[in-house]
Amino acid sequence: MSELTDRELDAAVAKARGDTVPRVAIATGDGGASAALVESSPPFYGEFRVTRKDVEEFCQNHPSYEVGEWSRVKRYSTDISVAWELVEEMAQTGGIGVYNSTDGGWCMEHVPSEFNTPSVTEYADTAPRAICLAYLKAKEAK
Image (cartoon, rainbow, N blue to C red):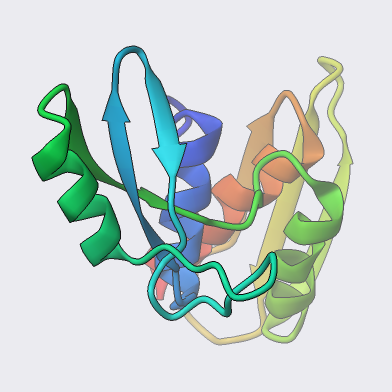
């Protein structure tokens, strides 16, 4: 898992937590992207709201564009305040430790209070990333 990009790691954590991940329809083309709101999003900027159907119609009328998807996932692997949600969740099932490792990186340890559940130790360059890796490993161990 350490080979995952930050955004891939964020998505893996969101999936493991059972987070609802909003999907957004986008039109991509000409080297750029034009984002549209997901249909369940509330309108903003007055009454204006773009739906997936609007994006599909736009793409039909502009052949150089295609419909894509984009998900908005919390930034668990780069934002310590978001990653700390994982620490708090793990603390409910055992002992935890987040500290600087001797190589200048970060370490996250989780020692479950549940009998016969293995401890988890993960190292990474940043604390949020170490927390994410340990969280996923702990989820796998269950």
